[in-house]
Image (cartoon, rainbow over all chains, first blue to last red):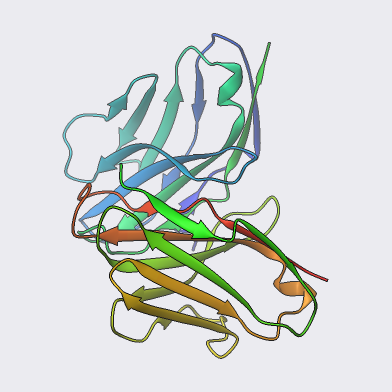
Length: 116
Length: 117
């Protein structure tokens, strides 16, 4: 079974509007972390936001927020006020267990295009 | 955040030659480094996990004799693609987890684009 599922291969959004990128996950480990990364065409992986499984509140970082629904095992990324520079590939990832020295498992990604 | 560098950023080589890619943590000690491979329009796939001073742990399906990983110091891990073939052409990315920086975060290098002719 896929551990991380991103069902939207591509998404379009109008500039200045909000967009939600979907991510569902599967794990039996009670301790895990969920990450979102942005990958522009240059290839670098840019860390956006992190949500720990025990975090009570949804994570927010500037225009990025993570809609964490633990019972549904979803961790959707919300980008508010989209900008042209947000056009990129977005990956959801999960790390099972505690500590940063554990591997990340990535979803298949969503290609976001922001339209002027 | 912490900085991880990779060298070279791109390389073109002939089939049958070996290529070494370096991954360095510039401002922290990386006890664990990860090597990923990414084919065009696909996700990152973990190849191996390397811990300083010990042998790397390879993912299923990754040939350890072909992809040699050395993590000789707390700031440097190397990936050597031996006897490279065109199907090894890919984007190789390392990440580092260490003793400083965010407890929750791994730090990614900028990647190395390998083209084997």
